[in-house]
Image (tube, rainbow, N blue to C red):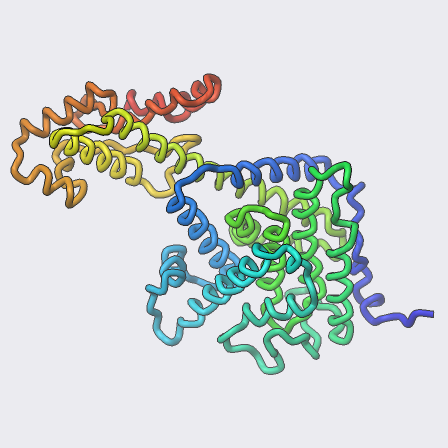
Length: 421
């Protein structure tokens, strides 16, 4: 006869089971979309420097998001400077930077452990404790809180009371055993189910750690690291593993509302909320990737139009169109307009000063030379002038490389607009 544990009386919802037959059909549709879009991210062809930048952007976003939920007030630009080791804060605010560094260090550890050796992917109680130590490293904590150690006291978060302290170690063992069980393995004849099951596994790991609340502090950040661990172990692309944290941060009040409801209503509501957010974040991420590919293809097209043998005039014209493209496309931040970047024209009076290299190229040239160069670019179909005298890169030319139906849709959303403004 098995002795009854205290949590069975106080937390009967900790069943380590989920009734997905009651899940909304929308959950299954969204899981399919999440799987498809993650595969699109994985297969995206980007220059190595662009791919590295994409990874950096979303790692910083994820690290900031998971700490911002807990009150971190740094901006995304400041978080980026923390990542690059460039931000200097007064002593009273240094802990904000330390919180960011801790999440980045934890993710680096997870990546370096899992990617070279898939046998390290299994979750254990010791790994969960280690992630909590990463989260709280170098931070001041309340009395009785030991980073990476199971709490020995009762905790209350809002209206929710964590599981009894004496049961937390046992509950973490149960959680790890459940997550590693056949419940989350795709049948041999349906391997396509592995990615959607991994998404469900990640969200349920998060939810159960929040329910158990085994640590004196840092439970939410540890739960979100478990999600990243599971998605990375399931071979989701690294930028995708940060997206759930972004979603939770951007919908923070709903995040807490969903967590509050789950102990009364079961996990299905939280699963739908999490997967819906993952899909929305994936759509935005793919918009960014498509914009990167668009810009990269435009630069290739420019070089193809000039060919390999170039005169001094052609080299100057090449510099002019490349700098015009960069200035126009980068004028507005967060400018994604599917599938094109938003393009801003440049007045003729500013063309010479678009870059130090361009300024040097035109330092001893007349306005007539600039006019000849612009006319040459216009004849090549690389640039065009608006009625008010501003200049655009004719980057919508690369829409010709898209399938016809997509090209028509893109022209209606962005490409055709450039020439009518």
